[in-house]
Image 1 (tube, rainbow, N blue to C red):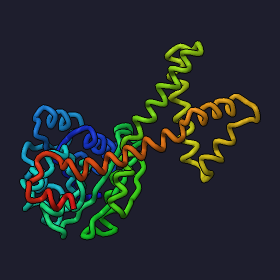
Image 2 (image 1 turned 180 degrees about the horizontal axis):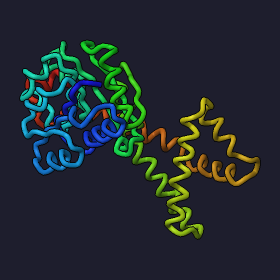
Image 3 (image 1 turned 180 degrees about the vertical axis):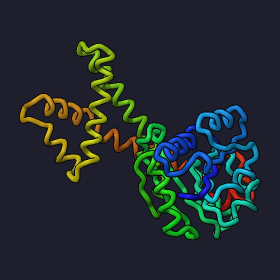
Length: 286
């Protein structure tokens, strides 16, 4: 790709995307420019990845054909207003700010601006992330495909067409790594209780989860069918699964996702990020 990519905000997610893009050679170092309100962070990214940087968000926006908005949600309104004249000039805007709806960005720019909303998860930092993308009506198939191709350097990418589903996405894949890490912690604790050293228990638990994930990812079989392949009649796996079912683990996971989805909706509708101009809050709430 021969386009320059700008990153307004140089946090962990932005760094992960920059690292993935450069490692995959989808773009060159010279094609990346960043800005950040913290000089120390900006210079750190500049020196680590040999990319250009500027303390000026407007300059950063002007340089890029594709502009990633990777600031904190509370800073989004300020950045949009600051860069509005530039961002409306045939730019492709990619927002990775959690909870910021497309219609809010449109309310501060306009509906003719090409906007792609992205919900990545923390695993993009190890190039095994899950990113969900959605375009507004001004963006076309070429635009979304460009973003999908860029993000593929950090893991898997799925496109959705109903923004309401971002709440479920947030609950399942956005928060999901925390659930898996809790499960890993429990597996390791159980191993230690059964006499394994912590190091051995950690390695067994981690590789088991990685292996199961890769089996599922590489198979067309359902999760249930793959699970059955591990179970022997009256064996250890059958006994363990019976306990998990009795303890309500499956229903607890479902209820946890439901609760997180509900909370995501509550945050979006009752707690707009700090810094929203008052005249747009009503529009954002719908």
